[in-house]
Image 1 (tube, protein in one colour):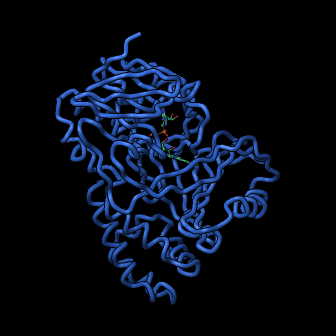
Image 2 (cartoon, rainbow, N blue to C red; image 1 turned 90 degrees about the horizontal axis):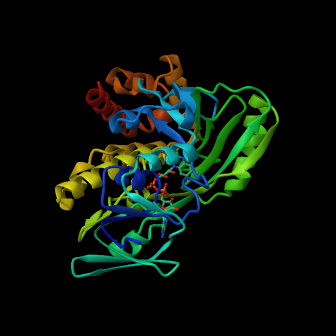
Image 3 (cartoon, rainbow, N blue to C red; image 1 turned 30 degrees about the vertical axis):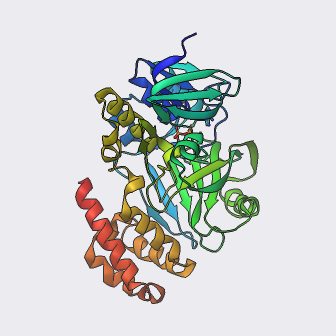
Length: 380
Ligand SMILES: Cc1cc2nc3c(=O)[nH]c(=O)nc-3n(C[C@H](O)[C@H](O)[C@H](O)COP(=O)(O)OP(=O)(O)OC[C@H]3O[C@@H](n4cnc5c(N)ncnc54)[C@H](O)[C@@H]3O)c2cc1C
């Protein structure tokens, strides 16, 4: 069996698989027995990413089409977060199997990488079963706890646990709307989400930067929100996992080794989503290898949301607002039609400042308005 490849990719998640799509002399080493299983994701993906990667949406790997995404504030007021393009709730197992079929790279399963060393120009990769492989290029697409990030780059990231279940509900839900619930008291520096998979099932979970009992908060949410809106619910499967976050970008390329996706903490600072960013990074990593210029990799992916300083600022402001302030944001947005992009109007400032708690946050609001103004200008 061939042991020497131009490129070795560690990890057959969305990032590694897209990277392997365009590389001929490449091997993907994956620890799982089956591509995509188990799922540890809410499976939301903006349409933009598929368009950019030239992937046609396919009902075989789409559970639901999303045309609305809503922030729900503590007082129940909602803000529309939707973009024009919309998105999907994937069937991630089938999606990854679809990506695997498109791969030119060879994929070997049940190959957990346990050691990596550089000898001269060659990367030597060892797997748990004692196999050894070598390559010129090395891709660390091995997720949030990446061995490549730790051993080759010696970079550290913060790891946040997320608790999530596939849940069956009694009453029909709107399976075109994603909901994000913000409540600083119950789920500080984070949110609870409902991503519908079908009329009666959804991925429901939460992540938080605070020291809270995720299980207790989710239980409370199920009993007080889900039951009220959707009747009795049944937890079908635990699909929890972890999200990597960094305050400053880490090194992503070194000696022909590149980090892709969660391995490089490429998650969106607001949503924690990383599937789309991982795929774009995988695509760009492959292009850099094909052009023989791996040093250009960071500049090719600088536009991704995970490197956008403004989004980190929005995250900081959002999580610094207490429930009273969040409720007032909801009130103002509702009076103005409920769209988050109302924030792009400087003329909105007096309306926000008419609220007592928001008045105390005038500088934060002004910053938000300026960021949204710039964001709207770059998008339209
Ligand atoms: C609860 C939860 C909900 C989420 N919801 C969303 C969402 O709705 N939308 C979104 O965009 N993102 C979401 N994310 C984040 C998303 O799952 C990740 O950003 C995405 O999977 C990153 O893709 P990746 O290819 O970089 O890594 P991964 O998908 O983690 O793939 C890495 C692969 O590497 C393999 N691997 C790891 N170590 C080794 C090793 N030593 N040897 C061999 N193989 C190895 C793993 O088995 C895995 O298959 C969520 C995350 C969590 C935890």
